[in-house]
Amino acid sequence: MSGPISQAERRGIRREARRVLAHVLDNGLLGSSGPPPIGTLRGIDVMGKDEIAQKLSRALIIARSGRGVTPDLLRPRTFFEKLVLAKLFAPVPMPSPADKLAVGAYIPCAWREQVTTIPVKWASRDPQLSDALNNAPIPSGRYWLKSNCGSGGNIPVELPADREKLEWLEMKAGKWLNFEHGVKSGEWWYSLIGKQVFLETDMTPTGGSALTDWKFFTGRGRVLAVQVDLDRSTQHRQLMFDRNFNFLPHEMFFPTGAPIDPPDMFETMRSVAEAIAQPFEFARVDLYETDNRLYLGEITLAPMGGVRLPRSAQLDEMMGAAWVSPFFEGLC
Image (cartoon, rainbow, N blue to C red; front, side):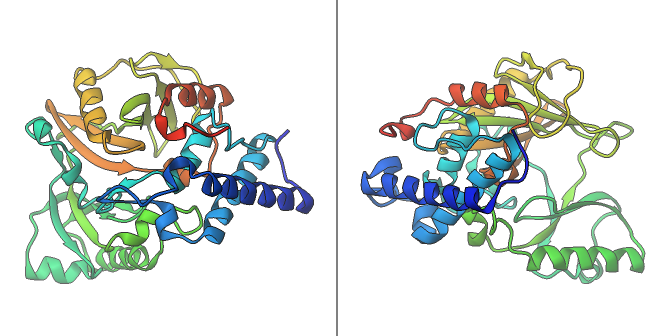
């Protein structure tokens, strides 16, 4: 049964989190007995033991409140359980793949004729967009103002814009630059990114609808599921499919809806996503497709911060079962 939990239960969950961490470290599990592989970092290399225990307990408390059951991190079976462990213990290639301005470096050379990143017209550590427009004119048209560090930082922009609009955009950009994303959730990789704001070209075809964002959840380099979000600004629907694009009538984080047909390039998109995901224990690879061209939007290492359960326990189990990896071996 979900709902608020008592202070006594919270204390018990915190003790459980400390027990899990001690068991992992005392037995050298999840690769904790040695240094990170060359060119990578892990949560345990960046955060202290007390902070790791706090992040584990927070995830467990949120899960217990949401579903009424405390996840078993020492016998991980579900997607959520495995994601919590991967977020804190799995090696992540550096520089941080969560940097939206640097994500193109993770496109394998063999795929760079088929996939690229969306063109960026301006990027800066200074939110003064009006100065940039005056000093280096940007062509009129539609863009997206985004933050390279974190989620939720994106606003459509029509240029030229009046002074009032530019001041509002600069205010929003300044807030993004001053916000420390991922601190509460334990998404430690954001602290390693030099924060910037940028203008990205709007790739929507003339007279067409908004680009569909195809999100490929991968575990150990293999697609576990595909997420498609539709009508975000009106009646948001979030559809889930398996790796072969068979519709899954289960809810991830938002209400589902009627299934749709796969894109013409689906098999190529899946191959690209798996190629990009090879260096990661977990990655959600976000791709766009337009005019028979693929664009890499971002690499997400912990959807919803890795602290939010899928609405569907069945989907959580299915994705967890599909995530087969030696990383979890040795856990009792």
